[in-house]
Length: 376
Image (cartoon, rainbow, N blue to C red; front, side, top):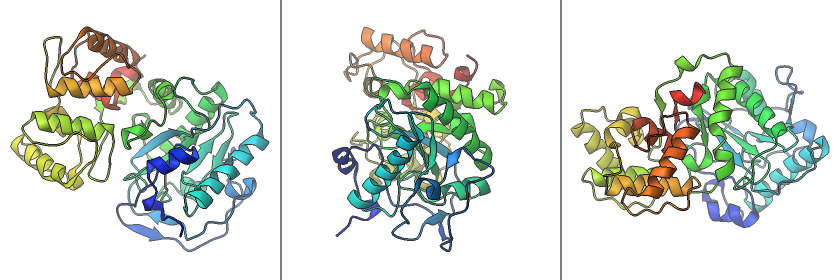
């Protein structure tokens, strides 16, 4: 019996070799009647639609979410870093991906909304993704990130980027696609995140993730937005339907605030009550669905320096180790290796590299964006 989309876990995907994931959709879903795929979009003629690359029909009706799209999530595909940059290869990539998702994972269709090849070709992934991009209202319910499938546009990027970075052709097309998504869904450059911000995974890869500040800057400039328009900090808005390393950071910080939580990255029911109580005690409005909003993060995250110890230090060390600083260990002691890694992250995001963890440094380390990064 084929697995339902919400039953496929990350380990299944690693076994088959593709860095995507899926979960049940949260919120109202609007089932649009099945319609024939439109001709290539005049608005976005550079996107190769499902008909043009020869997609199979979905195995069940494609759903349109009633939720508001609030972010873009970038992935790497954990496929080989090929040197075939042709359109023919890109088309075959789209077919291989759909076959994997439908035949091995048991999904209704390709999991992500769009795919970018190493040669810079952009393909529609899940059927009706291009149609809903043109409309710019409600997105297709996808299968790329648990808890965010009805809220986030998922973009897969061909290749594996743990130690290597994507080729320029891919990056150029990715920026163009992100600009289109932002304009159509009223998003901003600071609404771009990585898969591992909302899922326990190594996707999108350490080397690729380090390029996100640059990608966001390029999107900002292409949209004609002045850096001063960026918020001081755009934190990852994890909530009760998300399991991720950032959830583990939240658990460390809530534990530090007096709540006995197990820091495992799983947003359990115990976190709902703990977060609501913390927000109430801190004079912060209790958020729907246990969402970590800006006010919550900034009440939880303490300033750290070389004299700091304890769970907040463990939390920052845990994230630094995941972001490509293996010399950092989660000891709870703010040692020299931790300070050097903090300084490196501060430079990457345009912050003053003093090695002290203020709110903007916290935000950058856990996966958010800061205004300073857009001014570089």
